[in-house]
Structure formats: C-alpha cells, structure tokens
Length: 145
Image (tube, rainbow, N blue to C red; front, side, top):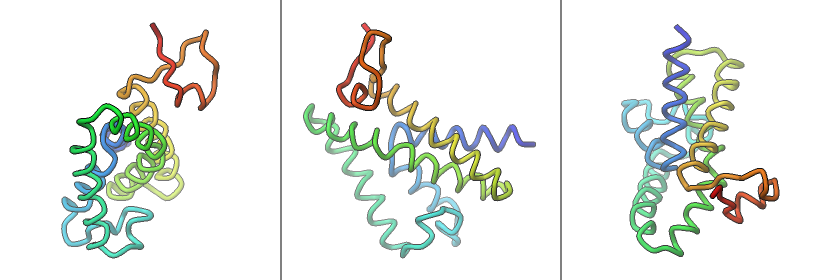
C-alpha cells in the first residue's frame, strides 16, 4: 500500500523540519547492522564519522537553542539545510520500504519540500501578501501579524 509508505516519508520529513540531525541519527541506529546503507549521501561515509557528526549536531541543537542570538543563527542554518536533509531522509525511508528508484526520488523530493515548509512554519516564518516575496523575505523573518 503506497499510502503507508507516503505517510512514513512525510512523517520523517516533518521530523527533519524540526531537528536536522536527530532523525538521520535514528534512521541509522534503528536500521540495525546495515546502518546508513539506504541513505543516499551518508552511505558513502564512514559510519563512525556519520555517528560523530550527527550526534555532535544534535547536541549542538540542544545547547545552542538556549541563547536568542544563537537560536536565530541555528534556525537560519536549519532553514537552509532542511529541504536537503528532508529529501535524504525521505529517500532513505522510501528505499527501506522498497519503493522503486524514480518513485523514491519523487517521494524524497516531496519530503524535502515538506521539510522546508515544516521548518519555516515551526520557526515562525511566514510571508504575508504585503511583504516582499522571495527567499530574502524568509531570511528577513517577515511574519504575518
């Protein structure tokens, strides 16, 4: 059933929109001995390097989010990387459940877009019709009032 797989991809992409590294870390750790073999970019790297980077980034997300200035910098970085990480996580879950190559890419791309939207929404970023359009407006933190 394609609906179950689609919901799995969208849920991991939503999690990536909230935190970048933790969902990828959980995908690898919960997949057993294969670790990140289904994850597109991470499968090319050493597992110990991937665990170290993802665990460090998860810790950084928890520690840095306490200060206002650091939190805004972290939100901008997460907003920039959330579509890529959402697509990577979406493709990984699609490959894990056995979707074909082009369908996994399509679902992963949709997951990346969903991760970006969720990240923008969770960070309080919304563009009103009166605000200037484009990516600059998102980074300028135009909000609907």
